[in-house]
Image 1: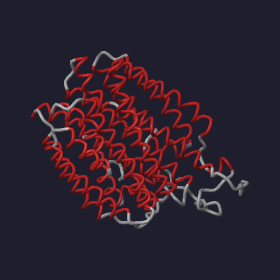
Image 2 (image 1 turned 180 degrees about the vertical axis):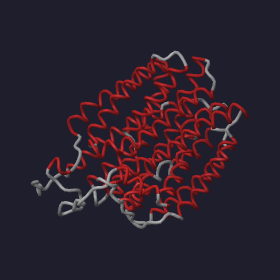
Image 3 (image 1 turned 45 degrees about the vertical axis):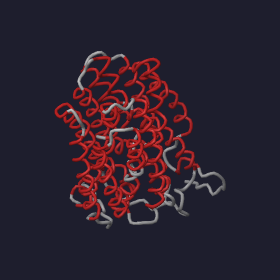
Image 4 (image 1 turned 60 degrees about the horizontal axis):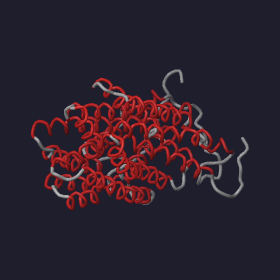
Length: 417
């Protein structure tokens, strides 16, 4: 293989740009249910628990798409997986615009949408960062996390405005069109690895040494499952999902509306949260390159827990804005240190596979919290109990984070590999 030594723009930054746009669109579509719950409830007369169950299905499939995405990326590369995910997004949004029965909501608005956005999610970002960057990896992971925040920042207020003008069905068609418009860009510019353009991963002067025998995904996960580090990472990320996009991403706007805050104002608070998350996640990526990721995780979860314990007492726009600022700073700031710990512990070549399952734990937590949040609200008439329980969980994750070991774990090839 001829390695290019030409100076100029490193093509990995082009790949980062394409991935950022794809993550932004995926995050916007994934976050849409948070501002569509009330319009669906009003238009179709379905209960909060029923709609929250569909959201939960979507979050769960979003999580199980993580291991699938990791496996597909390791075998076929990010480009094919990204194109497939975008195509499924288009199909799910068009089908969602036509739904008239609860089973259709569960299938199209829930399962298919969750699978589609999961293929173009955090696992994709982790795989791209570890393929293209040895230097500045934490920064790139932070940029990808910030892209997810930007998706929320851009899409949620826009969706509220579109729903007000042409209804939630029209908003679904608009989301489908946005995903469709991105497909040609990915097909034209996305590349799977530095070798495709005759380059090296940024920060290396020689091609990385390939192992004599690369272990299979089964062998990699067999080793991971025997490691306490994997279970600590999965447990903390489970709590991350439950306390972020599971509970807050799904139920913050309905909580605000329950207390007389206009939906547009509540969506604006989510956008403000996205702005602060953009800043927090970029800063987290920078910090991950310089400090112990375990300490960073402990700080993030502790700060999140305190924010959640205060949320039941927030019943006015000013308090909601303050919460959005505080919570937004570490909404997904946990991703860069968690991704780095996965890669450093189980190997960069295995990061997609292992992080896929860690991310799956994140979305199982998110799905349970989305569903239980709806149940708690229907049973008690309020989200207070759910928010307090989430605060305690987040503080628990602080202690779990400090128990993570940082020693590399080598996968043993399975028999016959």
